[in-house]
Image 1 (cartoon, one colour):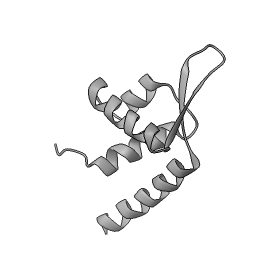
Image 2 (cartoon, one colour):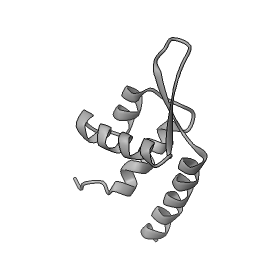
Image 3 (cartoon, rainbow, N blue to C red):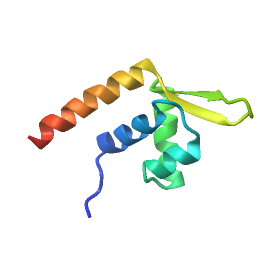
Image 4 (cartoon, rainbow, N blue to C red):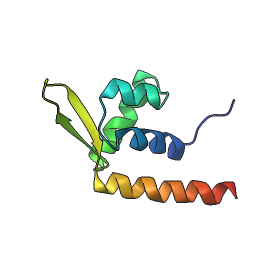
Length: 84
């Protein structure tokens, strides 16, 4: 088993946050532990790739911003070219 690159982890997080998801769902779907996930989440929020809003029940929902979606598309293309 090989370690994923930072690019692969960011892709996994952004894919899950495209339609909005809570922290736990993103963390599990991206297959990250709590500490590692919080590092990525903080960095992505600071860089404007994700936004945090509240749903009707007061729970935090994280959604990919337009910049996040553009980065996801770019990273997917780069990933494609790296596998050729």
